[in-house]
Amino acid sequence: MKALFMGVAVMATLSIASCGGNKSESAAVAEEAQDTVVAEQTVEGGVVELTNDALDVTPGTVAFIDFNATWCGPCRMYGPTFHEVAEAYADKATFYSVDTDKNPNVAQKYVGQYIPQTTAIAADGQVFSKTGQLSKEELTAFVDSVLAIPAK
Image (cartoon, rainbow, N blue to C red; front, top):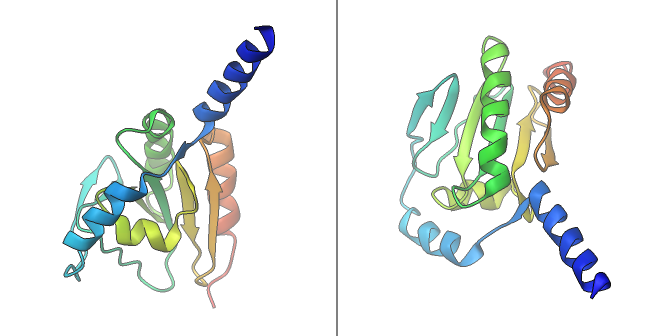
């Protein structure tokens, strides 16, 4: 019984760090959004909320993308940290929030298996990702490291 309890505790702890993707819902939404070409966005607190499954990042600029879902607890807890860092770096990079269920084509291009995932597109076009709920310090260090990469 003690071993079973420990196993459940370990699984619960691991699930706090990240959530697995919901592929069946994403696939259905992807079929509906295939005709989308132009990125539609709304800005909330310095973060661009992607609304139509098309991500346009201007070449030579730096972008940070928070891939998340409304059903993902760690994603909801990470959102305020991402927004806080986005406000601090708004003059140096563009920050996006992408709901993987509403934007499956963008998610399929960049997301591995787990969310939350923070993806960076450096000025030279390189793509870097970190999975899980990052602390403010971890996210700030990640942002600083990507901003230090010179454009081509």
